Length: 231
Image (tube, rainbow, N blue to C red; front, top):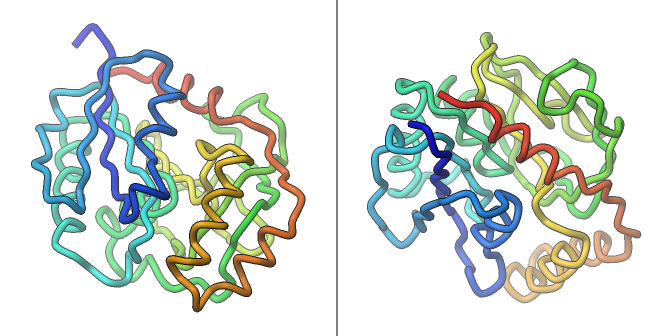
């Protein structure tokens, strides 16, 4: 396949508030793509027809399986079999761990991360080589990956999350717990909107809104390097 073509698997639950396809479309810089909104039951095309797959975040919990989770898992397995490069963010990161290594490698996080954190890259991986380290980035998660087994390699961590970035051995398959694709402005809007959607988390969300955004805006470099990996 000569021309790059991206498949975006969109797990958003409140598309009026959280629209990850738009975030990633802005970063792939004109590369042709198709987007499938999984919670709506849209059919997933063959990942082998694409050069890259992006698994977006979701307001859903990886710990509470829904029918579309199984559809996404099958797409992940198919992409792995075909050798298609994959990049998963937040829920997508957790989906990679659960699908490829088992449900025992995801859990509710003891300390949710909301707002902006500093991520420390401690493995010289090609996706992050030479970029600012540590780097600030937006996060929003109540679940996390735990003890990913070989061939996973943990690449980065934050103070509250031991698996911020991981790679599936030497394959071009990465999970990123944060949301590098979400700008500080969109992060603030997302947190504000979640107060209405998940009022039981209001105190945590307001604490996050009180932070000064710390974002080193590495998303475009990360995505460009990801797209450089080809079948």
